[in-house]
Image (cartoon, rainbow, N blue to C red; front, side, top):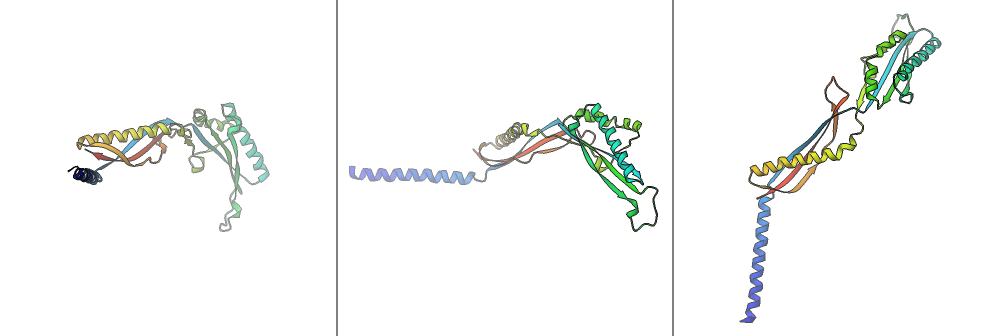
Length: 233
C-alpha cells in the first residue's frame, strides 16, 4: 500500500500544480486586455532668460565712400547708446551691410534719385532681458542723433528665449508622471479595479512657447507624458 502511496501523491501534486498553472494562465489571459492609457501634463510659466535684438538702419545715397563713413558713424552712435545704458560691448555684434544698386535693374528705364540703398546694423544677444526691454522702449531717442531704426520687419523681430529649461526637466517629468498616475488610479477606482504594472510609457516632447502675442518675454514650458497601465481586480 505504501508503494502505491508515493506515485499517487506525486500524481495528485502534479494535478494541483497543473490546475494552478491553468488558473494563472486563464487569469492572465482574462486580464491581458484590461488596460488604461492616460496622459499626464506638467506646465509652468517662466520669464525668458535670453534675448536677441537686431537693430537695423537704412542709408541711401550715390557715393559708396560717403555712405561707408555714414554707416560707421551710425554704428558708433548706436553702440554708445547701448553701452551707456547697460549693454555689454561683448554682447553686441556687427551685421554685414546689404547693398542694393538701383541702377542695376535692367528692366527699369527710370533712374531713382539715389543709386544705392544700404541696410546695416547691429545685433544684441544677451541674458540681460530687462535691460533690452527697457531700451526697446527708448530707441526713439536715437532720432535726436538723426538715426531712424527700422522696425516691424521680419529681420528686425526681437526674439526671446528660455535656454535654462534643462534644469527643470526632471521635476516636470516627475510631476507629469504623478498626474498621469493619479488619473489612472481614479479610473481604476471607478471601474472597481487596481493599477498593476506599467505596460508602456512615452515621456513626450518638451515645448516652449510664448504665453501670448503681447508678452513674448514670458514663456510657457510644458510636457505631456502618455502611460499605459494594466489593471487587476
